[in-house]
Structure formats: C-alpha cells, structure tokens
Length: 126
Image 1 (cartoon, helix red, strand yellow):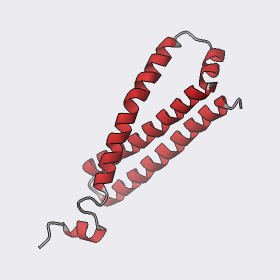
Image 2 (cartoon, rainbow, N blue to C red; image 1 turned 120 degrees about the horizontal axis):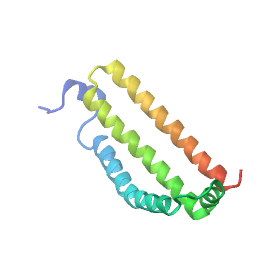
Image 3 (spheres, one colour; image 1 turned 45 degrees about the vertical axis):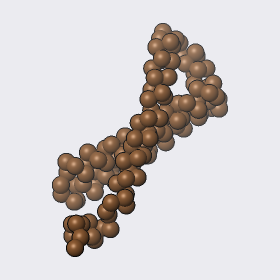
C-alpha cells in the first residue's frame, strides 16, 4: 500500500524527491537576502541626492559590485522559487500551469542575467 497519488507515482515525486530541496533553497535565499537587502537600502539612502557619476563610481567599486551581483542572483532565484509555488498552488490546468512556469523561468533568467551584466559592465568600466 502506498500513499502516493497516481500522478505522483507517474512523475516519481514523493517525500524528499524535489520538494525538500525547493523548500531549502527558498529558505536559504531568503536568509541570504536579509543582510543584502539591509545593506542595499542603507547604501541607497546614503546615496540619496547623488549624481550619476557618483552612482556609477559606487557600482564600479569591486566590493559593491560583488554584493550587487549576489543580491541580484539571490533575488531572482528566490523570485523564481516563490513564483513557482504560487503557480503550482493556484493554477490547476496543466497547460496554463506549464506555460506560466516557462514564462516565469525565462523572465527570471533573462532579467536577472541582464541586470548582472549591467552591474558587471559598469564595474569593469564598459
């Protein structure tokens, strides 16, 4: 006797197959984002009223660029994980569910990559 649903048997998902990893990754990215968001908010408040040249110089600092890349990577991965849960919980038809999962993945990957490339371009003086 098994407690898996027929769909669960076909997909091979069960306890500790994928949900646990997803849950841990969502928690770890949330923990990583706490100090990064605090740092970013404090930094941006300190830069209030700064001109473009000062902001570019700030982003060009290797320490700042590294923290920004870490923030962007963690934020977009966390967004993807959270959005995936919302889609799985609230969209019940398989077709639209798959379409939204694909759109979410592409959005997070493309916008995250473009954001990181922008930071690196400024950082390396491009």
